[in-house]
Each structure stands twice: as C-alpha cells, then as structure tokens.
Length: 317
Image (cartoon, rainbow, N blue to C red; front, side, top):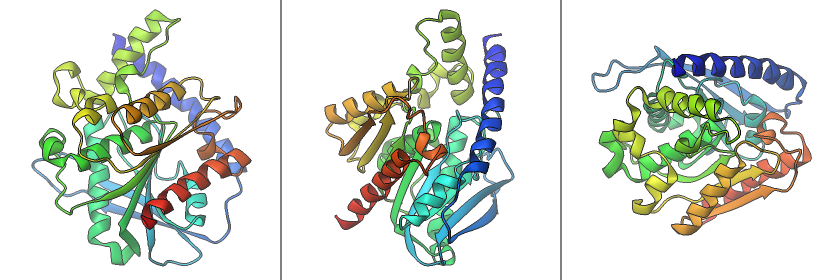
C-alpha cells in the first residue's frame, strides 16, 4: 500500500514538473552555432544484462563544427523517474559553447528500470563512444561526467564503480574492459545519499511513505538484503575507495530540499581526503538546479563556467 501511494504521489509531482519544464525551455535563448545530432543505438541481447528498453537514444552537441574535443557526458535529473536526452538541452548547449563536445542520453526510467539498470545503460553508452570515438569526433581520453539532482547521484555511483571496479564489478554487473578513465565529475545539486532521501521531519506519515518508496523504486523489493543497497552512498564507498577523480560540488542556499546533501558530501570529501571543490551559492533565490533550468542567468553563467573551468584544470594537470 505504501508503494502504491508513493507511485501516485511521485507521478503527480513529475507530471506537473513536465509542464513547468516545457514552459521554461520554450523561453530560453540557446547559444548560436551549436550543432545537435541525435542518435539511437539498439541494445544487444545479453544473457548477463537484461536491458529494459530496446534502444538507447542520445544526443551529441558540437560548437560551430564537428571537431575532436574533450567530452562531457551529462546525466539528467528527474528523480530517476522523469526526463530524457532533451531535458537539459539548454544546459548542454551552453556547455558545448564552453569548449566541449557534450553527450546526453535517455536512460530507462523508474519504475520500468531500477538503479542498477540505469547505471548499466550509462556504461553501455560510454563503451560505445570509446569504441566509436573517431566516428563521433570525441576525445574520450579527456572524459568528464556531470549530473544534476538524481543525475548527480548516477554520476557519482557510476564513477565509484569504475574507480573500484575490482570490488564492485560483480555487484553491479559493470566491467571496465575498455579501461575507462574519468578525469573529473561535477555534481550539480546532487542527491547522492539515497538512504537520507524522502525525510520530511514535520510530516512523519509522508516521510514513511517516501523513504520506503524511493528505496523500493530504485533497489526493488526487500532492498535491505540486496548487495547494492550497502554500496551506494558516499559514506559507504569513500572509506575503502581507490583514488577518486576530482569532484566539483555545486549547490545553493535556495535549494531548500537538497542542499544538505551537497554539504554532507563536502564534509565526507574532507573527511576522506577526496580531491574536490565546493561551491554553495549565497542566494536564496537560486533554486534547485537553477543553472540547468535557466542557463542565461548571471548566477547560472557563473556556475556553468565553473564546471567548464574545473574540467579544463584537470586536462592541464
């Protein structure tokens, strides 16, 4: 019953978010000169991995002309339940203008897919891009990941799996056969701590429904007994992790619901000596993922420039 109520509530939230996002996107002015190519890729028949969709759709954004450049893969947010490769169009256009070839994808959404399925689809795409880097004009030796909200969680966990593949490959059924190296990640108003999500201190009944519902949605039934449940959050991973690529953590004081997650991540990075940079914008009007929704705002230009500059610093090292 709790899960049924949660699904109804979650669907209502994202249905209304979709209406708002379409209005926002229609009013945003995109940078000129960006080439956006759309692709679809059939998933293979695989006995070990059961993909939840028939094909993977993705975009690549180039500035002015298709040339070889460092790569940013953007993983959209949307509570693991909402969004597609076009959701962050405006944001990807702006990142491409800052000197990168940018890739976005449509991963299979919950409830059809679980967290592990979404991670496997990201891995499938990255392997495809490495194998076909010349075809797409991508410098995959300079690979960076960014994600907002739930997309930030996927970016963090995928990076952790790649960095610690000898420990996590069998748990997630993700094997780093192409020697993927991630140079840096940017976590944008991310929600990396799944066990702390859905907690509303003033609403005990709502908290009970959402805490259970999110975990049930992402891990499946009997989630506490699943191996991946104990290998998901930063404080599960950092204590025994191999060296992590540098992390840019971005949040803002207007993000009333989730800023605590970025603050907690910054604390854990300090505790476990993970290389990182933390920016908490002192602006009460800067809402959750504002720089993705409204990339033309002054604060958004600052945030998105920080992402590009942070990645360029890793290239120069």
